Length: 292
Image (tube, rainbow, N blue to C red):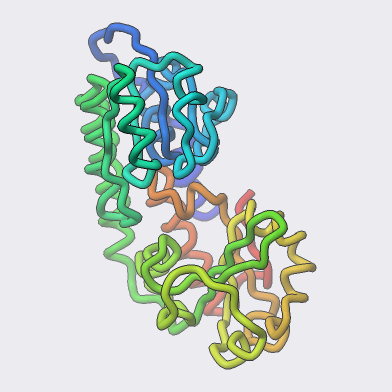
């Protein structure tokens, strides 16, 4: 097992909850945002949560909680049915009028900035820790993540490699990531070229565009690949088989939230992604490489 996978496993298996801190009074907290939920769990505070949104699926203790739906399409009735005292809310949650209605109902809404940038993760951790009264644990976790981010930034430049991130959702046409996306931030962090960086957002792309942009490797998430019908269906997308990535069957797959959620697992995941792309560029990996 290579060193980045060891680091990735340790990051997932060693929560900051091992620290001892002063006991906090119990509260009925609800978290909206997968990255925030992971931070709460990493701080050893998952037991205070009474609910989550659909993007909050890790770890198992979080996934087992009742969901109030997608964080961008909240309904006040569903949230209030869980009788929360506080909401920890990612800044993309909404609609705004629903959050205002919840506040008017007496629920404390704590908004936390969640930009999809690697360097923003430690500040996010500290904000969540402060809200939970766990500043000491938050500082330890934030410092660990800052060290991982610094290690990634110090790595040698990757050999030239054009990548494409493919986003799949159940039943929908897969979309390719362009600029101003979490996937672009992920590719920037590891230093790989986005073959579709001139295109804004996530968009469906035809076969001619795939052939013209000539990606050399496809990056996907496990959930996205499943939504597309698996790897065999992926290579059947029009034009993809005629790209360098398709001809060599170069595909790298990671967990959805770990790769794009910009939570506590993301720095270690990007270190692992860097190594896999480096080995792919040097011809040292099999065509398809997925996390265990």
